[in-house]
Image (cartoon, rainbow over all chains, first blue to last red; front, side, top):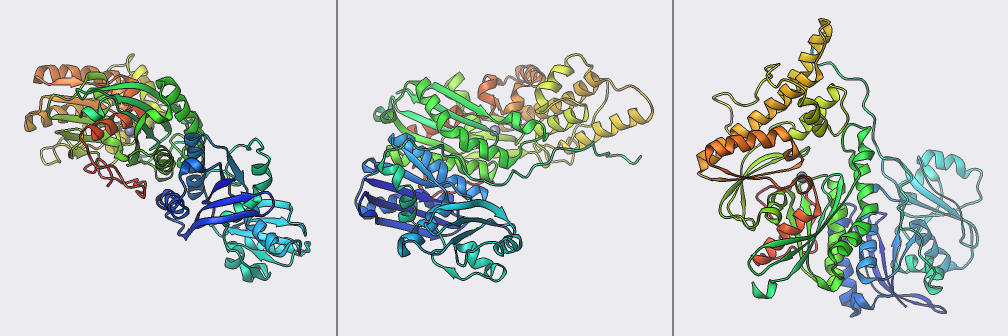
Length: 230
Length: 353
Ligand SMILES: [Zn+2]
C-alpha cells in the first residue's frame, strides 16, 4: 500500500511517500526533510507536492496518511496534524497518528533488530526535553514525558538504558551523559514502520490528538489594577 | 466570466477565536450567493481569562477544523468535486491561529487540485457585505471595528488595493469594550453586555473624553486607551468618595463616547473623499448605538449605510469565501502554496502572491 508520511513535531519538516509491504516492510519512494523550525507552515505542502512529483504519483493514489502526533512544541506540531487531517478528509483516506518518538525508535530497532534499551529525546524548547524509553524489543515502556534535562539525568541512575537518540539527546548530551546515535529526527519510513500493524490490518485509526504534554500559558486575571494614585 | 459562473468557493477563517468555514457560489452577473456559514467558537474557553488566549484558540482551531469543513459542505450541499477554489485568511491575526487555517487550506487546495487564495482578513470583512446587499455600486468607505481592529478604509473595488485612511493608535474599539466591561464587573466579551446595560443608562451622564478629536490630531485615526483610563479613574474616584456608581450610566456614557468618535470621523472622511457608501463590519458593528447613530448621521450626510447582519459582521468563513469569489471573478492570480501565515499582513495586501 502507498502511504504519505508527515511529521512536524521536531524542527524537521518531514514528508515522504512510502510503499508498505507486509513482508518487506516500508520502502521509501521519495522524501523531503528540511530542518527549519520556523517554516513548517510554508514548507509542508510544497514538500508533499515534491515527493508526489518525484515518485510520479498522484495524491489520489495514496491509500493512507500517517502523521506524527508529537510531542512537539505547539505551533509547528499543529501544521502536520491539520494538514494530515484535511488531506484525509479531502481524499477520503484514513489518517493514522503515531507518537513521534516511536517513529524515531522504530528506525533504531529495525537497523539493529532487538538490542539494548533506548531513550528517545527530542527538544521541547524552554530548556526542557520530551523523552520516551523503549525496552530491548523496541516497545515503549515509559513516556512520552516532558522534563528538564537535569531531572531526566537524575532518573537515568535507576534505569538500565545506556544509549539515546534524537536531537534533544544531542543538545543535552553533556547533561544526560549517554552516547548519542542517529537518527536525530523521524523519517517517513520510521513513521510508516511504527504504524505498519494498524495500516496493514486496516484498523480503525485512533483520534488525531496532538501530544502537547503542557498546558497552555494562560493566567486568570487578578484584582483590578488601579489607574489613579490612591 | 462565463467559465466562472457557478464557481463554488470554500473559505476558511482562523485569525482569532472563531473557526469559520463558509461556502459561496458565484453568479454570472457577479453576485455571490451564500451557501453555508459554519462557525465553531472557543470564546467560552477564553472567558475566564478576560481575553483570547492564543494557545487555547490554536488548539481549538485544530480540533474544530475538519469537522467544521465537513459541516459547511454538508449544509451547502457541495461535494469535493464541486469546489473550484479555496480561500483562507492569511493575516492579520494571531500567528498560531492563522497557521492552522492556512495549513488546512493548502491541504484542501492541493487534494482537490484547485487554486488557493491567501487573503487579507480586513478585506474579507468588507467583502462579506456583498452577500447581503449585492455588489458594491462604486467606491465605499469601510469602518471595521472589533476586538482586534479599528480601521477606516477606502475601497474602490473589492478585488483591488485598499487605502487605509485611519486606524486605532492603541486599543481596538472592541478591546475598550472588553476592558470597560471588566471594570464594571460585566462578563467577557464585553460588547453585548455594555450595549444591554447602556440601554438603561443616560449617555450624557458623564462627559468622557473623545480621543484624537483635537484640531492637531490625526483626522481619521482613533484612540481608545485614554477613554478606558478615564472610565477607570471616574469609577475609582466615585468609590473613594463613597458615591454610588451607576453602571448603566457609566456604560452608556462610555459607549456614547466611542460611537460618537467612530461615526463623526467616518462621516467626515466620506465627505472629504466624496464617497457616498459606507460599510460597517466587525463584531462592534452589532452594537445597537453604533448602528442607530451611524444611520442618523449617514442619513443627514446623504450616505448609504450598509451593515451586514450580526452573524456576518463577526469573524466567519463566509467573508473569506466571498472575497475569494470576488478575486476569482476578477481573475486575480492565486497564492503560491508556500505562503506563510502573516500576523501583521498589511491592509493594502488583499491576496498573498
Ligand atoms: Zn475580524
